[in-house]
Image 1 (tube, rainbow, N blue to C red):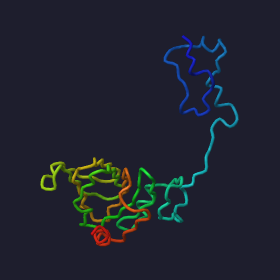
Image 2: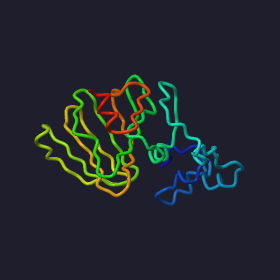
Image 3: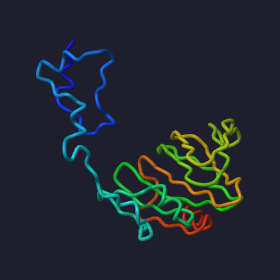
Image 4: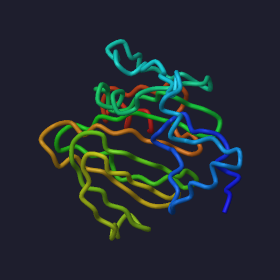
Length: 192
C-alpha cells in the first residue's frame, strides 16, 4: 500500500519513516528511498545555540515584544522575590525566589489562572476552595508543575534548605508591567 504522506525524504533521520513491513516494492513507484537521505549533503540543519552563554541574561520586563529566554536558567539566576520578565495583554511571566522557610502567602486570584513550575528546591503546595479548607496538599520539587485555577486559595511554602526557584505564568496578567519586588515584605507593602 502506498502512503502519500512519505513522498519525500526526511532530512532529519530521527523522524524518518520506517515501514512496519517489508515494503521494498513501494520504492519502485517514484518514492524516494529514505535511507539515501543520510548520504546527502546537509542532511541535518544546525541552529545557533543562544543559551550557551547566559551570564549576560538581563532580568527585566520585555513587555509585549517577542522574547525568547532559557526560562530554567533565568529562574535559577533570579534572586528577587518576584521579577516580571514578560507582560503581554493576555499573559504574564514572573520569576520568583522564595527563601528557606518562607512562603508565597495564602492568596486567591478570582479572575486569573496561574501556572507555577519549580526549577530548583522543594516545597509544599496547599490549595482549596476556602482559606480555611486547603484540602489539596502536595510536596513539590525540581520540575514540578502546579496549575492553579482562578478562584482557588493557594500557597507554596519552601520546605527545603535552599531558596525555592520557580517561574509563574498568569493569564491574564496579574502584576503591573515591570514589577520587581526584592523581598516578600516589598510585595506585601505594594498590595496594601
